Image (cartoon, rainbow, N blue to C red; front, side, top):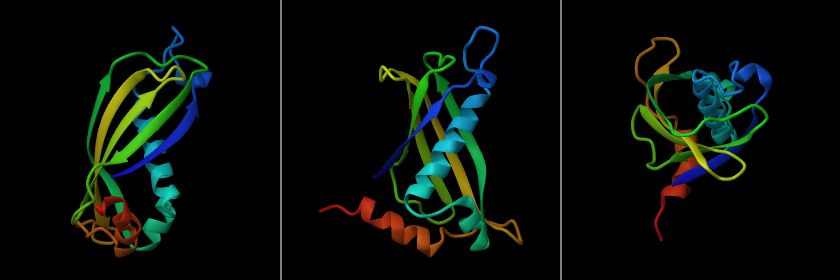
Length: 138
């Protein structure tokens, strides 16, 4: 299992009139978490696209438990529970506040797509090799 965490400070533009994070911004929080999770193993979206592959969101489920508010320091935790197989990668996410209260959960599925043909592509070998050690049992 691979897990990473990223902190995000809630700035004013992310909130509504009540000082609560607007619900549509959680998709961005999970994207920031995903991109940082990939960066922590040595990849950026730019480097993945240079391999001729794009990551396309195909499914997203978000569950709202408690509100995040202006100036909160959020921790976005992203977990890969399974080594990605074939063309699909599933990111399980959770967002916590500074008091370590669970605010939100989300599951986002992405497909690896050939950048030229926009058809499904296999998980790039380079990414598989970086992730493999997190899924080996001893």
